[in-house]
Image (cartoon, rainbow, N blue to C red; front, side, top):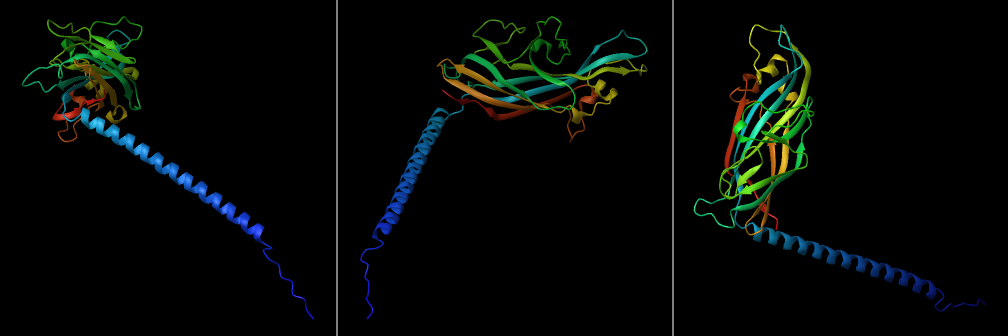
Length: 288
């Protein structure tokens, strides 16, 4: 006669351990999910608050750049006295005038007049030939080839190299000293800068003496400089503060103009000009 062996709750301990592990995993997952839900909520709320604050600050456009004028040409420094040939170091330059619209057609107020202005965060693209840099430009010398590209030479009163930051002195009335970065509080004077691409070609020999040597963009053609090899951009940030101590910034990105593919005009003709004119082309956004 067979004896039946009955085991009561023989695997109970194992089942309990399994259930405990599953419960712990579920609890951990629930905590993890809850943490992420809370984290996402906090991030979204903070972002929404920032966006709301941003839109509250910028419900109306107080300052904008509505016009930019460019004048591009080229020049050279002589390495030898004039004779049957010329030995030159070539550079290309573009003068830039930036006009800020403070929307003061009706009335100048503390909100749309400025007390501080500076430029920083200057960056350039990569060029095949040359070394780009940015300068303050005396508006009285705008469009003239007057930049001193020799770093060992004494700086003149028409230009000022910008290394990290360019501070403007804000003037309420009287005459501006254009040899220095100064600007009227009502934004009636433009920001004037000069982009220079130095050392495009060193010791360039020009032996064609059938014509007088002219120091302008035609030197690039005579030296067989292909324009695509010196195409570039400059970007920077303009910071300004109004009379209410509200701070605004504008991120400016400018392609250096060398030619017009539609009209066929180029810097090879001696100089090349371009004007960008558009309402609120670059807006200043209030940061504080």
